[in-house]
Length: 86
Figure (cartoon, rainbow, N blue to C red):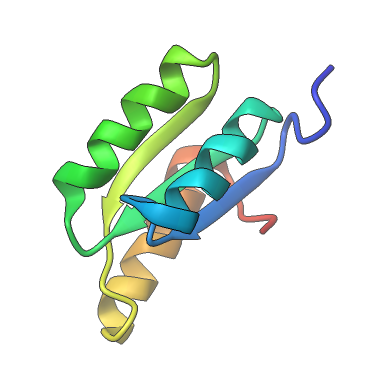
């Protein structure tokens, strides 16, 4: 069993840099990752990398400056994985 198996994590800025690294590390540790960024195409590429490493993830467009985007991202996490742990 992986350390974070069964846990759901939302990662903002998952399209590049530190956010991408954190998202990939969480997926490798077994978390189901909701990878979000303002540019969804970048996050889709990161999701493919997570899946190739044996992780589970979805890509979500989310601008954290927009409350409606944040609410939609959280709702997508709950709809897809049943909750949010981190």
